[in-house]
Image (cartoon, rainbow, N blue to C red; front, top):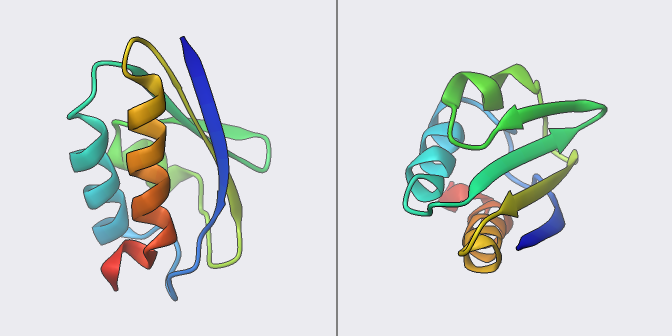
Length: 88
């Protein structure tokens, strides 16, 4: 199964090391393959370096997609994290 959602980065510094770490820590709890896309670039949602490589800043719209048995809960959990501003 595949599921995806678009979210906006609302935290002040965008996707820097701490949010990327939190994103990956959440993503690895799921068995689905997770991808994050922005501005024509895609990254493995379970890779801190991949996420940092997107160079996503505040206001950017990211597409989080997952493929696998737990795709929907994975995307919902990750979208919730982004929508919380990574609790910053």
